[in-house]
Image 1 (spheres, rainbow, N blue to C red):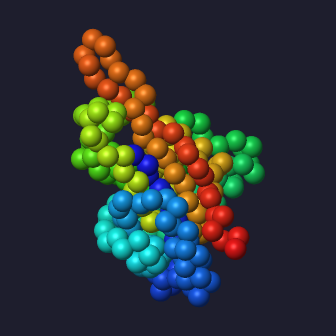
Image 2: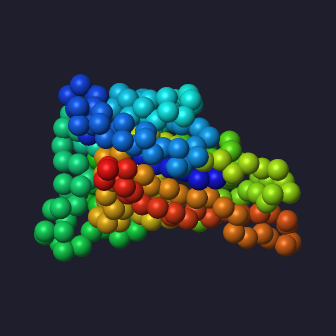
Image 3: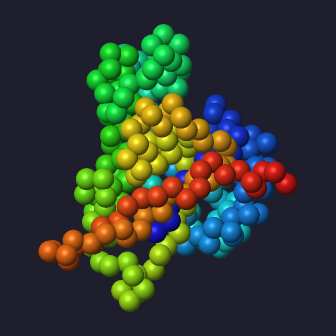
Length: 232
């Protein structure tokens, strides 16, 4: 199974839609979307993501299905509205400027600058929702791998689907990191997701346990932040 995380086009955040530039970017993406050989398209409920997805879906004759947990990640302390305080990317800038380092592993969740922020619970919830969705597709999260409910080889008749998630930079950061076992704050520090960029993670069988007959799959990064469609 290949999962394509596709960020929306240039946004008009005030109206949760695309700017004119964003519409042009989404159209350029749609002109190349056939290259991915998509079987299904899912989108965040945010207008800017749905709008981006619709251009590609119309090209392919596919339905855009909404997954609520693909919404952009929430941040901000609980004293005010979401997004009322610094984003993780702004906080990370302060970490690097003052500490010359960022929190290692999962320690970001208990760091004094982050532990009371909405981002902690929201990232955990979104990753759990992704695992639930994958389990419904036959992949049960098991440590660093996924237990396969049915063998993925050709003899099993299982179809290797290509599925697109049209969403946002923050949620793409969280979910791709979760699949690849890269801590969220490390993703924040080292990975960016440009507008209409395509990032692909493939989940494929990697091992089997002879004593139980269980099959396991791992996630591999196939492409990252691909924006070649914008170069024409």
